[in-house]
Image (tube, rainbow, N blue to C red; front, side):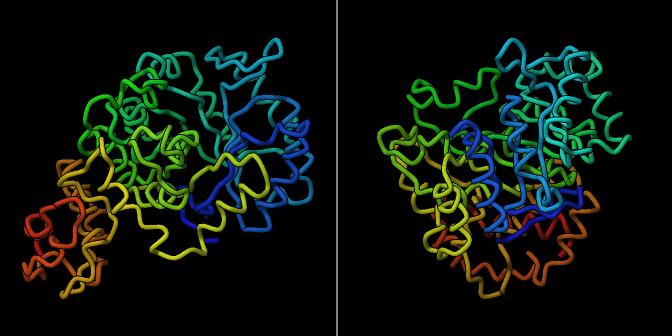
Length: 382
């Protein structure tokens, strides 16, 4: 298993994480089985969005004796009321739900306290005005939450939250189809047939800005819906009109800026093992570029997908990294010091480009790489 730093949190997390979708199967007996499987493969990141008390109790029992082996991303504002799930911004319910969560999980802290499911700016303002964010900050000061997060499907809302500098981790839906959709408050439109009824070209600019802002600010991204609820793996259901493999979906999400881990919603030990097997497959199996370039109703043109088809460069420039750092300066409208330092640490720089054009002939997305290298050299000075 490979590990990445979760933004600036200092937490080292497995690239392949675990969602809790399957935990309630077999009367919650699957929770222990999935945690056992996760531990055996070195998977240490777990998202616990569900407030089901039976599930939380089962997870708490399964964690006994090995709590320190897992990083828990558990959700505030996701509570259990009258026998069903409820998203709430009522501070009394949030507080009671959090206290119950710790008790049922049998732990004195969670690594990431995730403010649950915010897809509208109005809702974000309510999180601020109702005291929810303040409560999360209080629990952080008390050591019960180590880092504050937010889950969202809307890049405009997520960016507003990240810009406060209070949000350290973002749980966001990332896959090659959703990334082309404009920001919206209705999450169901991300997979609605009508959203793909007309040709879609290039990544939505709000999503691109969000990923790049998170990279620049050191906000780690944990990914949900990497497989689009399974639709991307089925040619008949895929919004793109063509199926991708699980490895291609995982590779795509892991290549986005700031992404640290993907929370895979496994429903069985074998499904989780299949996801963990991603670490041992060939680079050819992980390659998503040609598949994306062949989508019949979706296409990327001129946008770097960080797929590295442009390599090898005769000047040994890491083109994807140079492009990423250049894009960060565009997103910020300046050269942040951290970006300047990361660029300086590269072994070779944009100014070394000999403009041979080999990279552009290999690029499946018609990126104007030589122009990007010229602009990067001008921005950074070499």
